[in-house]
Amino acid sequence: MTAKQILQEAIVIQESKGHDYTTNPDENQFENFERVASVVSWFKNPQDQVFVSLLITKIARLAVLLDAKKPKHESIEDTFIDLTNYSALWGGKRLQNERHK
Image (tube, rainbow, N blue to C red):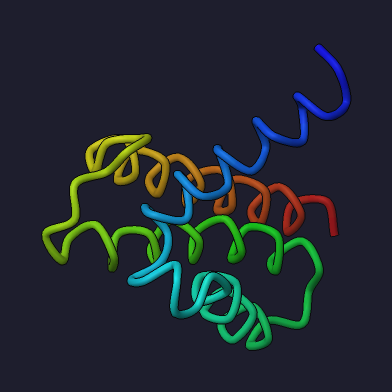
């Protein structure tokens, strides 16, 4: 695969995933990033920010998909499972950090 082909494929994937992550990709392709940035700013700890970023990305995606938009990529069920897993991982990391203080 050439560099040009990789770039062309990246554009196709970005546009397709934009469908699942924004209300109207033609209007504001950065909608999901703006939502995530807003919530991440509530947390001071960099590790918390990483977990929050993953969780809010999924929650923002749900906001779009639950508004009657059919997903092009992961199912809504997969998104709920991801939220459960990220929450458990975050809780496990926080508890591990507390034990090692």
